[in-house]
Length: 147
Image (cartoon, rainbow, N blue to C red; front, side, top):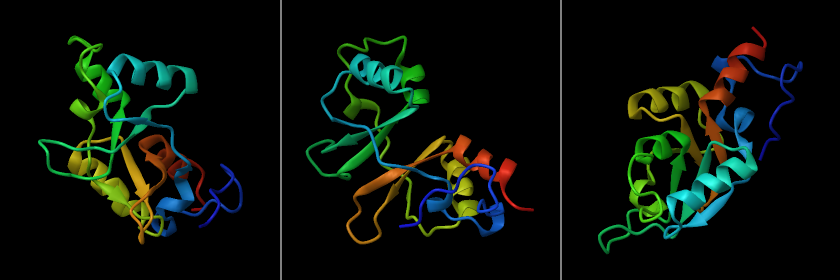
């Protein structure tokens, strides 16, 4: 897997040549699906992150996917509800995902189409999460990529 480029360096590709691996943040902070939304919020605040990967995500007794994402926007939408009773499972999004070699332009289109600010970057062979790609990561490529 390619190392994320140094922001603003000669190695930062232009948007039209960039892939998800060029911009993503490698590694993930995760929590079990039954974690309260208050605990998820505490994780985000302590780690200074905008999303948490949810593991072992099951809905309605059927597996929709092993992984999901709770973003800061999901927490804002749930803020007026009982966040101590609601869990990560209740709000985690299971789609869309991208692979490291997917074009950054396509990843941006997926974010816009699905109205999300984060995509999980998954292994093309195992589907395991490798990192998170945010709209701010894409903005960095737009701002600092070679033109």
